[in-house]
Length: 259
Ligand code: NAP
Image (cartoon, rainbow, N blue to C red):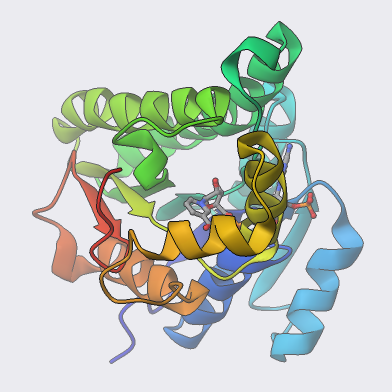
């Protein structure tokens, strides 16, 4: 049987990268999927490219940093299917700069999307999940939420906050049998990793080649993770097989070490 048969899942940041892979894996496992990103057209392209029907999908443009947008997405999902079983909070942005060059606006924007986006969507979904005493929330944090990194203090701060928020909300939601977990990817082959290589190399005063060489010495498996590997963990955490797991933040990082 499919692991997510008849489940309704909201996936943010679904227009590319990890989010797109989650949509594909969830649809394959029988879920009905609400795709969210800032523009609708790329979401429709994802559905077309993956051969997903309009019966199985709902594409909604929303800016996760706006609480009203997040509430509107959940209202549309509820109107369409009457339930939300899984929330995958994946939308995120990256920015690298030495701490002394970071502006308060940099911090604000990263927190608005990476932290408040997660908060808004959890606040919009939890009441429905708690009422049914069932639901799984999966927040895509990062290994950057577990340790320090040079030249990305705003990004790491936002991801540490997501890990902390996950732990706290898991405790409160547990009384309603709703699970809340985080996945902490290491380096994943997406557009964001290309951004990271270019920006982080510049911030470190290194060439991209030098930066990538140093970056890969930190990954014992010696390769970038693939978006599908993150998606498979999201399938597991959203499935009934994972009902006993909550408050955790699980690394998928090729054994990445802190440096
Ligand atoms: P990506 O390829 O850059 O995709 C980011 C997604 O987030 C896009 O779909 C983008 O949609 C969406 N998004 C950005 N801002 C948004 C907003 N304000 N409202 C709604 N959607 C928004 O990134 P990715 O690598 O797949 O990353 C996905 C998640 O994994 C992020 O949270 C990231 O921090 C985390 N992560 C990534 C890596 C990595 O190595 N790639 C490692 C650790 C953690 P539009 O731009 O189309 O709106």
